[in-house]
Amino acid sequence: MQDHVEVVARGDGRVRERPWVGVRFEVTICAGVTPENCETRETVVTIPVSNNHHKNRDPDDSHPRATSASLFRLPDKPAHGDVTSRTEIPNQAVARSPRVSVVTPFYNNAEFIEQCMRSVLSQTFDDFEYIVVDNHSTDGGGEIASRIADSDRRVTFYRPETFLAQAPNFNFALSRISRTSEYTKVIMADDLMFPRCLEEMVAAGDAFPGAGMIAAHRLEGSEVVPAGFPPSGNDPPSGPTLLSGRDAVRLYLMEGHFLFGTPSTVMYRSGLVRGEPVFYPPGRIYQDTDAALRILRDVDFVFIHQILTYSRTQDTGLTQKQERFRSRQLDLYTHIREFGAAYLNADELARQTECARREFRIGLAKQWLHERVGGTNPRYWEFQNRGLATVGERVRTVDILMGVPGAVWQAVERPFEALRFAARRSVGS
Image 1 (cartoon, rainbow, N blue to C red):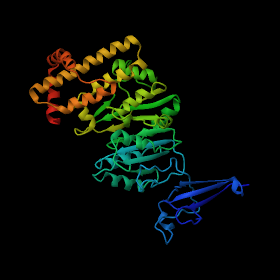
Image 2: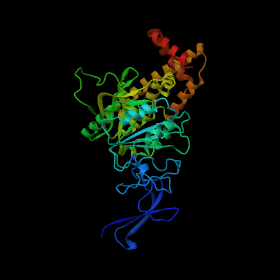
Image 3: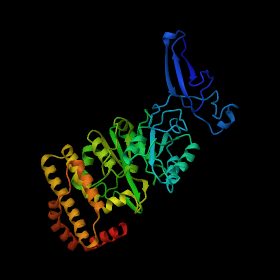
Image 4: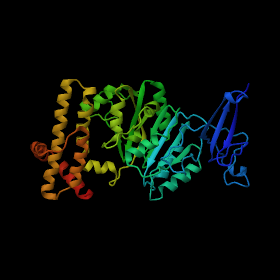
């Protein structure tokens, strides 16, 4: 006996010949003709709508009707109470399982969001879904993103019910990825992907099935980042470099070779993203780095020796503000304190903790000395204490005093660096 499906639209009780876009349905799936062989459940049915969908309208309704050739599927995730009615049902439906889920969460990026989205939609690899989440922008960015989403069936536009902090907004976006995609790629709204980005990253992931994280060089302004990798040898690499996750993290904790870039420069196995209810931990300085150090305990890491993304440098951006707060020293110190035991032996851990603590204290002392002549900056100390709180510490007077000799020595040894920092501080204050 052939299976059959009955679709009933809730609200008016009528059985429709075809499902309509934007209606919550009660679906009865039967394996035979008797009631005991049927299962009924309420769900949202989404259908693909072609560019000429306006030709298939019911005269009595404003919603486009699907043609008889249309396919429909149950959504990858049920509608949640934390999204608005505008976006409970994706405005475009992709009737297949994409290999890649691309995600852009954003807030007030009207100046760059269209360029970002166009860079994704122009990829040479096109087996992807594109999830765009507007966190209640007030500069018109949400309207720009929604308009582009309406014109391309690969794009699904969401807006949370309420404004979210950065990490929760990113996690909201990641929670919307397909249940069956193989890879997840985040691209920040003020960044761009070069045309072969997805193609190269998927190829690297396919070539190394044990790799849970894939990264590449990025162009940051006019600078290629990271520089100097691989760390030794003069021969150019013939292809992507495979490292165990442990070795990749050790290069960072022991030698300072930071290969994990920004959220825009890496790609994850989707299974790792779906396996974490909170992928980006809130309250951290660089949530993406924390995520990398967490997942690389168990998977391999692949680095592609090509420039695949572009990151803008803006004086008003979060990264630039964090540089003025000397966050790199704080970041390394807290990461060694939290993750060092998983990657380093006891001697290495003791040595690297002391080295990182010394550099962190020197940074505190530099700021303290600068404030003796340039005025105080309470935000700097709030930032440091917020970071230290993740490992159960706080800034102490003894930390500042112990860093003063090193800060004075570095100022004498590298006077131009001190002057450049003072200039940046005066511009950014």
